[in-house]
Image (cartoon, rainbow, N blue to C red):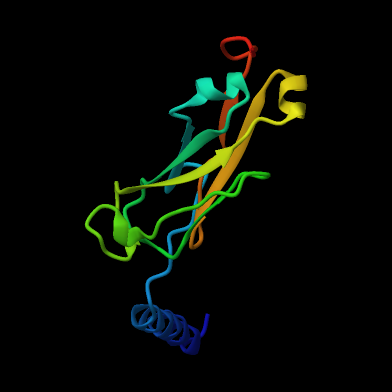
Amino acid sequence: MNQKTYFTIPLLFLGMLSACQQAEPAMPPVSGERLILKLIIQSPDEWKALQGEPITLAYFLTNTGSLPLRGTAIVEDPPREVNCPTFKTVGNLNDQLDTNESVICTASYTPLEKDRAADAIISRARAMIGSAVSNEAIFQLGPRFGPRWK
């Protein structure tokens, strides 16, 4: 290596470091080893589905990372339309989901004939906040997983 190379690499690194320090901190990436956004699905009134009545699905999103998450919580669970409150309604009431803070999103779902024919309601959901993506959460209800339909 020549002397010019020795000076170019450190200067390039310092230039990149300086640019990163001036920019808004990026959301931490999701890796296979460390889950940043944890999703759990529950239904406080699941017994209603067994009678063909609408149920509420609750999607618990928790920031398990070391940095706050900014943006809007989005939960994808087709065909259900999931509604999430703003972060200003949870935790310390600021505009981000801080470490160990949770937000609860909800959806209403009326069991369809296809659910009754399949003897099950199965929900597979994933959530996102900024660039953080959650685990895939699965909620199962029906005779294979609990009491019989009426």
